[in-house]
Amino acid sequence: MTVVLVVDDDPAIRRTLAINLRARDYEVETAGDGRSALQAVDERMPDVILLDLGLPDLDGVTVLRRLRTFSQVPVIVVSARTGSDDKVEALDLGADDFVTKPFVIEELLARIRATTRRVGVEEPALRLDVDGLALDLGDSRAVRDGAEVHLTPTEWAIVEVLVKRRGKLVRQTELLHAVWGPAYDRQTNYLRVHLASIRRKLERDPAHPALFVTEPGMGYRFAPGVA
Amino acid sequence: MTVVLVVDDDPAIRRTLAINLRARDYEVETAGDGRSALQAVDERMPDVILLDLGLPDLDGVTVLRRLRTFSQVPVIVVSARTGSDDKVEALDLGADDFVTKPFVIEELLARIRATTRRVGVEEPALRLDVDGLALDLGDSRAVRDGAEVHLTPTEWAIVEVLVKRRGKLVRQTELLHAVWGPAYDRQTNYLRVHLASIRRKLERDPAHPALFVTEPGMGYRFAPGVA
DNA sequence: AAAGCGCGCTAAGAACGCGTCAAGACAGGC
DNA sequence: GCCTGTCTTGACGCGTTCTTAGCGCGCTTT
Image (tube, rainbow over all chains, first blue to last red; front, side, top):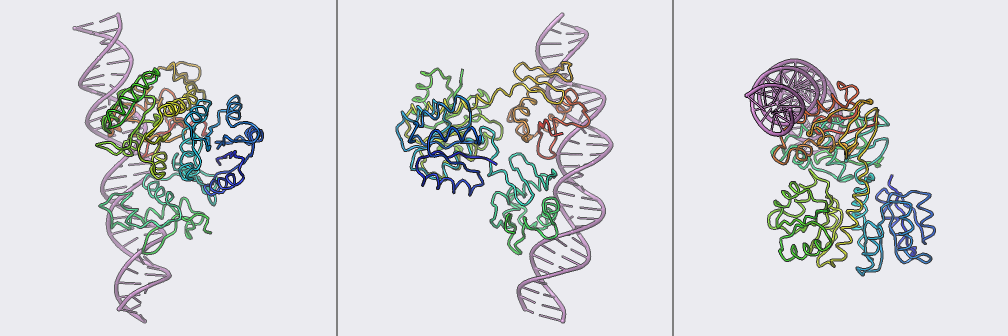
């Protein structure tokens, strides 16, 4: 699980970020000033830090400088300062990215993903862990109840499409088009056969699928957590 | 010397960036469209790419997608598109940063420094020692159970790609592209033959590979420690 | 109630992918 | 010019995966 440390003196921003991050399956730690931020880095070893520059005790720049004396953890500065001087300073002190307030949450999340990807941290977007099933699309690995399961290329192709749109209905023609190409729009029996083997490997009870659900007449849906 | 590839359809921007970068002792290569950009990556192996999204032939997003099928080189998107959707898309496709035009040159330079610094930090994975096998990518030396083993240039090229992405699946087309070039995408038999000799030299039991694992239909994976 | 449809399931043959071997091509060094 | 090491190319066998067809069940339609 990826741990994000949010450092900001404004409780409202801490809360907003925490909610959005937790909704994306990040684990969130918060700090309201520089000292507790540095302490939190020591204790929690976060995978990425969102750092505001305007802190009550230490300047954000100072926090960054001290941090870099003992840790290489990725830092994304989130600040109201828009001047390029501030950006240059922060980046040269070891920050990995610089986002100005007000920010669009989607963009910040994408920048977190980009940064963690570069550093090699596992992304929650590509990793997922529900109901005893662990899937890693980036690594192409699947683990059911602790045991590694082998999926064939076609099975992976189907699983990827469904998982990337988790919760949403994917029509049969869409799946066929994505996996086999436009010419196979009508080969719904392909799906029946391969979904059967996918369920046999990934479902807890293949006879009563809880994860890879059929919507009769429409398509399939990856519905985790809708127990 | 750090090589920067500047991809933009506007000659004025190419020139401006080239002048500024050369003044900072970067080596600069330029490209005005997507195809020549991808070609330049193959030929010059740049350390960082500045990529405009509005190109005359291929969309910048397409360039990025294709690029990521064979190279992990850092990409900073430099675009006039300011929408957060564009940013999210580019970042999730594998871009490392996103700068909007017009940009302050100092900030762009700082972002280049930040990106290259981050990539340089994780490099020292050049030596490794697992399961009786010692590899030194810098020296191109391999030692199996105390005895020095000789690898051919092609074998080294393959091993390097796999080891640098240890644990991750590397697709056959990626390997072929990285080792033989874009024209050899289909020559999967090259891989079969060379992987055989790599295993004969590096695996403890070449008949049952534990390190250089095949993922049928997908690619290969260097998976140390997954005993 | 019967017919039609869509889906899950199974099993078989066909097709594919991989590892292996061996022979030929090629280049560099002596 | 020959020798050595390397890379390419083709062929074969084996195991896996995909395709295809057929059957049964449950739901919807007529």
